Amino acid sequence: VERSRGLGDVYKRQILFQCITNIMAAICPNPSVVNPLQSTGFILNIAKIPEISFWCKSVTIPSITLGEATHETPFTVLYQPGTRPEFTGLNVSILVDAEMNNYAAMYEWMTLIGFAETTDDINQWKRRFIDQSGKNDANIPPLVSDGFLDIIGGNQKPVRRLKFRDMWPTSIDGFEISEDTTETTYLTFQVSLRFTGKPVLTDFLQLPSQVV
Image 1 (tube, rainbow, N blue to C red):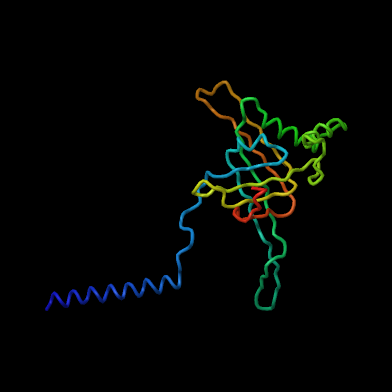
Image 2 (image 1 turned 90 degrees about the vertical axis):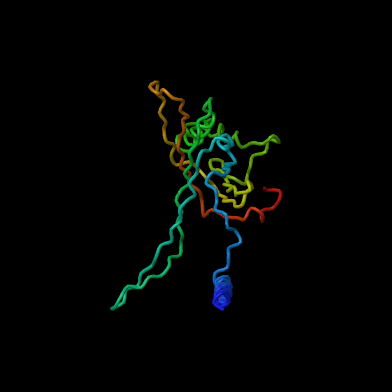
């Protein structure tokens, strides 16, 4: 009798547990994706500076803030959401290649934007944008460049794309070369990029096949 009563209690608890599980599943259903995003999967492409794509070491996705409006009353201060989100720049860490080609490309881009002294300097930059047919890319202004950041998921396939319009560098950090280093050190430099408008975040599967 005692054994039957004990088994009955076990069955009751199993039924109760199943009921609780069903209720929790209805209230808090499991997400369709249960794997976390890896922090090492990304591809950065800047249309006019292809030299950096292979050498990107890390990238910081821009932060976004939305201001607030206040309305004072005799009793308290009321807050309302702002109307214009603000984005920080895109910060990129780049490994310097053995011939400094990627650093030279960034250096040339930034100096020709801010320190072009002659029309020859401007033409030097514009020549980077002329395709094999000899036609200039009229969709992108000469001194800025579109770019996109593909985020790679756990299956080693892109899952999201951030597109940036009309990018240009605002700062390029220096890097130290020293004879005192006893171990092999790979040099990196930091680049801050500004863009126009807001980044466009797109599900990679929804992109047209011709732009993937």
